[in-house]
Image (cartoon, rainbow, N blue to C red):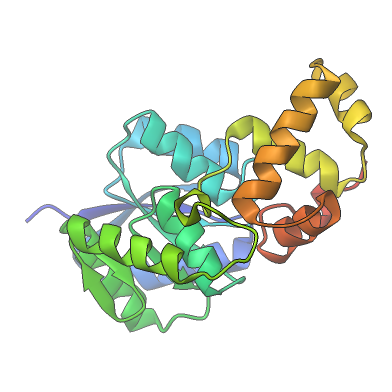
Length: 230
């Protein structure tokens, strides 16, 4: 029987060590590589073709949502299990809409994580104790989005749409306190283009202003405090 190939992507050496020890004790699992940031994780997933990627959301450089979305764009077949210390229902929706196959808080019980890996390796999707096929997870996402009762949103399906790479980049600059004009200069694009991107970001996150957008990104671990400093 072929072993399930697992790639670990997390910037904390101690957490990686814990996952490594846990996985090595399982006879049907094998570790094919480790990455410490988003860019490294993206390259390793593309080159190693693991069955499963254990992906932290809060990563230096590209965050886990960005990496997962890029893997789906590049049609990398690896299934991504997203791990987060910022666990809430909105984060779960973001994770699956970015292309994740499972979502687990970092304090998940070890035996539960092993179960999730095996379920996902068979093509299932896992949310908490719920197991879905593709049709089921799409229905779960649709239900989750429509249940979010936001007063300023006309089309609920536009909520939780993955931010584009450029939108995520602009959001990172916003958390550093840069104005739209300063962001435009830094990225070599027009002021109006930045304004258009900001409008899209506010709409997707359903927040009223750039300060709320920055707080949202930091609260969910999309941007790291140390990365937000100029």
